[in-house]
Image (cartoon, rainbow, N blue to C red; front, side, top):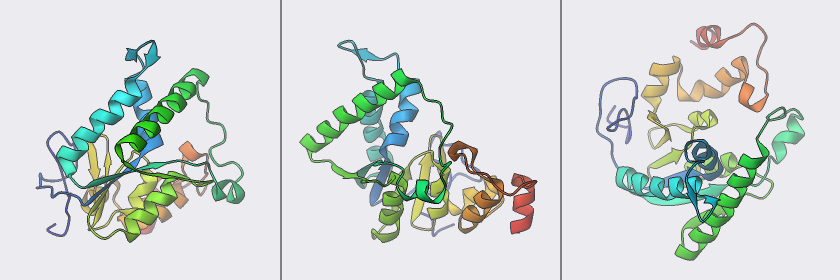
Length: 219
């Protein structure tokens, strides 16, 4: 696996397969809203000046971790709406029940982080009627060098290659670790999702086909 710059485990990472050495990345692409929602659950009890500060603390501490782990230039990408997906599939992401108070905490934290990043000169990209997925996908395909995507969104697995990996909590998704975990290649991820569906986005797959049968069909 010499072609991979991040193939396998890094310290506590529970990746599949043998432990391997991780090289630094040139760019760290951060799915900001995804990360904020992840932190709202783990840091909701952290309060400063009577305001929830768990998301802000989590994001800033995350930057320190990513810098030490990956190096590279961070680029923070923010969602800007569902865009064209709703035109294609009206039921996209419908049915999600989100606590109003949690949504308020996330929105307020995002504004604070955006202002803070602007003051310190952090690279930020804001989607306009476009999800961060599309922007990150474009950056992953066009930026020259090694890229790591910070997100738990499995849609990014289709982008994994010898120069792109995804850090999702305690797992680093690479070409090999995707094959080890799911039994398919990264290039087959779109077909796999089309067959099995994506309940988190309220997208149905092909009736009667689950993960096991989907893998069998794609082999």
